[in-house]
Amino acid sequence: MVLGAAQPAHPSYAPRYAPLVEEHRPALEGSLIRLRKPEPTDADMLNDLFNDPEVGEHLGPIMPQPVSGFRAFIESADKDPKTAIFTIERLADRAPVGGCSFFDIETSQRSAMLGIWLAKPYWNQGLGSDAVRTLCRFAFDHMNLQRVALDVFATNPRGLRVYEKVGFRLEGTLRRAEFVNGELVDCYVMGLLAEELVDD
Ligand SMILES: CC(C)(COP(=O)(O)OP(=O)(O)OC[C@H]1O[C@@H](n2cnc3c(N)ncnc32)[C@H](O)[C@@H]1OP(=O)(O)O)[C@@H](O)C(=O)NCCC(=O)NCCS
Image 1: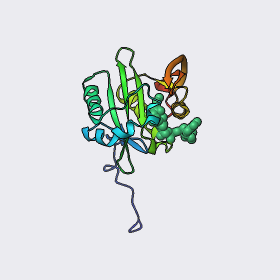
Image 2 (image 1 turned 60 degrees about the horizontal axis):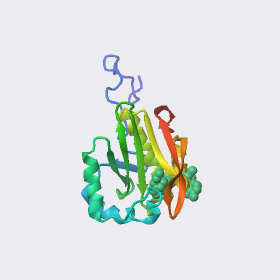
Image 3 (image 1 turned 30 degrees about the horizontal axis):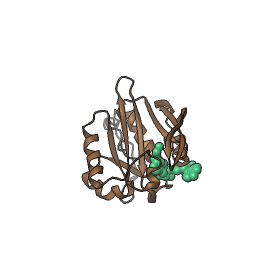
Image 4 (image 1 turned 90 degrees about the horizontal axis):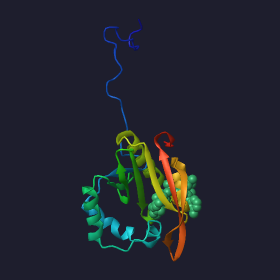
C-alpha cells in the first residue's frame, strides 16, 4: 500500500444503490430564460412593450390597452382552468421580456394551443426559441399533454423559423384569415407531437 494514495472503499462501505435523487434542471427553465407565474408588477413593466404595434401585428387585431387591461388579463387567465400563462424572464438579469401561454387546454385529447410574444428589444437573441422549447418540454413532461398547436400569420417569418426549429410541422393554411396592416393574410396552423420536440 502506498501511503497517501487514494484507496478503493472497503466493499462494506461502497454504495450499493444508485443515488435515489437524480439531478434535473428546473422544469420551467431553459438555457437563456425561465418561465414564471406573472406578478401584477409585470403589467407595469411590460404593458408599453406589449402595446408596440410591431409586436401586435403578429398577434391579431389587438387594440392598445391600459396597464389595468394587462392586469385584468393576468387575473382572468388565472381563473380559467383551460389557460396557463407565464412571464418570460431572461436568466442573465431576471428582466421580464415577454409572455407565453397555453390556452384551450383539452384534457381528453391532451392538447393545448400555444401563444407567445417577446418585447422587440429582445428579438433575435434566441430567447423566443428557448421559451417555446421550454414551454413545450413542460407540456409533455409535466402536464401530460401529447400535442401542442398554434396559429401563425404568413407575414411572420421570424415566428415560423422559431416553430420550425422546435419541431412544429405545418398542418394547414387558413386562407386570407387575418387582416394585418390593411391586408388580408393567410394564417398557418402548426402542430407538434410529443415525440417530435427538437430539444436542446
Ligand atoms: C416570434 C418571436 C417569439 C421569436 O422570438 P425571438 O427571440 O425573436 O426568436 P429567436 O431569436 O429565438 O429566433 C429567431 C429566428 O428567426 C430568424 N429570423 C429573424 N428574422 C427573420 C426573417 N425576417 N426571416 C426569416 N428568419 C428570420 C433568426 O435568424 C432566428 O433563426 P436562427 O436561430 O436559425 O438564426 C418574437 O420575435 C416575437 O415575440 N415577435 C412578436 C410577436 C410574435 O410574433 N409572436 C408569435 C405569434 S405566432
